[in-house]
Amino acid sequence: MAQSEWTCSLSSVHEWESPDYEPSLPVSEKSNPLTRDIDRASASRIVRMLQACDAQMFQEESGATYQRLLSEQVVATLMEVAQKVEIILKDPRDSLVVLSGCGTSGRLAFLITSAFNRALQELSQRSLYSYIIAGGDRALLSSQEAPEDDPKLGMLSLKKVCEGKKRVLFIGISCGLSAPFVAGQLELCLQHPEVYTPVLVGFNPPHQARNEPIPGCTFTFRSVVQRMQELAKSHKAFLINPAVGPEAVSGSSRMKGGSATKILLEVVLSAAHAAAFTNTPVTYKGILQHMRAYEKTLDITYAQKEGISALLEAAGQSLQRGRRVCYLGWGSLATLGLIDASECIPTFGADYEDVRGFISGGYRALNNNEGPLGPDFCIAHEDFLHLVLPSLDDRDVVLLLYTQSDDVSDVEKMALRVREKTSNLHAVCHRVEGDTAADDDINKLCSSSLKINWPPPASGSLLHMWELSTKLLLNSLSTGAHVLKGKIYQNHMMDVQVTNSKLYCRATRLLQKLSGCPEIQCEEALLKAVYRVDELTVDITSSDIITHTHTARNRTKVVPLALVCLLTGCSLMEAETHLQQQPIVREAVEACLA
Ligand code: S6P
Image (tube, rainbow, N blue to C red; front, side, top):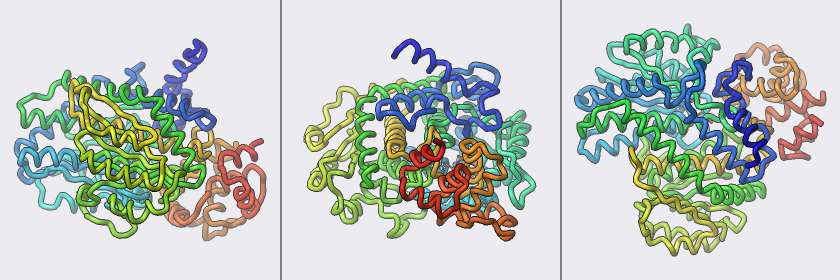
C-alpha cells in the first residue's frame, strides 16, 4: 500500500469517532468513511474495504466516547452475565435463558440457542435456551420487517415462551438499540423483576438509543435503557453495548452487528458451560482470550482475500445478468447460507430467487421451533435438485459450504449433479491444519475452491470460528455482488424497502442527504412514492407511520423514485420512466445529480 493511501486509511479508520462526524446519527446508522466510494470499487478493493471495516470491531478504546469489544467494562459485564447463566445451568429447574431479536438479531438468536442446546444434549442435559424472532420462524428465512415495530407482540411472545418459569435470563438483541419489539420485552422484564433478569446486547452507547415515541406506549427504547442503567448499578440488569464502528453499507447491521452479537454471546455461553460442566471458573483472562480467538478468525478468513474476491466477482456477474446465486450447505454453515440469502431481500431489494440457500437434511437439520414452513420456503437439497437445478446454466453461481466433519461423499454427489448444469461451481471448505480430507474430487469439479486451514484455536470452539468465518465470507460475497450490480450509491443502499419505522426514518434521511432538500419536503416525496400519487391527500398525511410502512410493503423503488422527483421536479410517472430506462439505480441517481 502506498504511504499516502495508508495515512489516509489510518485517519479514516477513526474518523467516525469524532463528535463532529454525523453527530445526529447513532454509530449503527452512521456511514463508514472507509467505504465512501465502495460503489466504484473493484471486487478485490471491496473485499479490502470490508476487511478494514470488520477489523474496526476489535479496535481498542481510543477515548472516553465509546466502549469497545475489548474494553474492561464490556469484558467485566460479559463475566457477570456468564456467571448468571452458570447458576442457571447448575440448577435449571423452572428456569430459561431466552435470546430474542428482530431480523438478523433474531436469526442469530436462533443460531446461537441451537448450538448451545446441542451442547447440552451432548451432555445429556435438557434444553435450556429458547429463541424468539419477531414475525416467527418465517422471519428466519425471509424479510418480515413490520413486527419489529410491535412492542406488544414482543411482550406476548416472551410471556408465551416463559409460561410457568420462575427464573428467566432474558437477552434482548437490538444492534441499533432501536427495535420496539425488543423494547417491549425489556419493559416486561422490568415490570417483573422477580422472574426476569434483562440483558441488552447492542452496538450504540445508551445516549444514542432510539428515543422516538412508540405508538401506544409510555416508554421509548432510550427510557428503557436508562432504567436498565440504573438497575445495572445493583447488578439486576446488564448492558453489553460496545461500539463496533459504522457498517460498510450504512445501517446494514447484519454485518458487524450480527458478527459481534455472535462473538459476544458465544463467549458468554461458552464461559458459562465451561464453568458449570468442566469446573473452569469464569475469569477476565479467559473471556479476553476467547475474544482474541475470534479476532484471529478475521485474520485467517481475510488471508483468503484473493479467493473471496474471485467468488465475489463471479456472484456479481451472475446478478448483473439477472441470474442467481445458490448456497448449498451442510450443518450450521448451511444455516448461515440460509440467513445470508434471506437478508439480501430487505437489504438490497433483491428478489427471493436472486440469492437462495439450501441445507442438507432440510427442516430436520434446521430444527427450528415451527418445523417445515410450507411450499414457499423450500430449503432442502432435494428442493434445490427439483426446483432450481433444472433451470441453471453457466451464468448461475453455485457455492458449496462444508467442513471436514461433514459427509464429503454427499458433497461430491451434489457437486456432480450441479456440474451437469453449470461449470460455475465453487466451494468453501473449513478444515483443521494438517487434515487430509479426501475431497480432491470435489476440487476438480469446482472452478474455484477456498480451502481454509485452521490451527487449533487457543480458546473456544473451532465450529464457532468456522461459522463466523463463513458469515464474514458470505456477507462479503452478497454485499459485494450487489455493489457490483449497482445497488449501492456511495455507501448507502438506495433501494431500501420502507417496511418499518426504522427504515422509514433512514429513507427520509437519505433523501435529505442526497437531495439537500429540507426534511419535510423529503418526507412528502417519500410518501408520494409510497402511495404513487403526485399530490398528497389529507387521508395520507393524517395516517401514521404504521399505515405508510404497511402500504410500502407492495412497492418497489420507493426511495429512488422519490429522489428523482426531488432532484428534477418531475412527476412520478416521469420518474418511473426514467428509472425504467436506467435500471441501475446508482447510475440513474448519478445522472440526475449531474
Ligand atoms: C439489518 C437487517 C435487519 C435488522 C433488524 C433488527 O441488516 O436487515 O433485519 O437485523 O432491523 O435490527 P436491530 O438493530 O434491532 O438489531
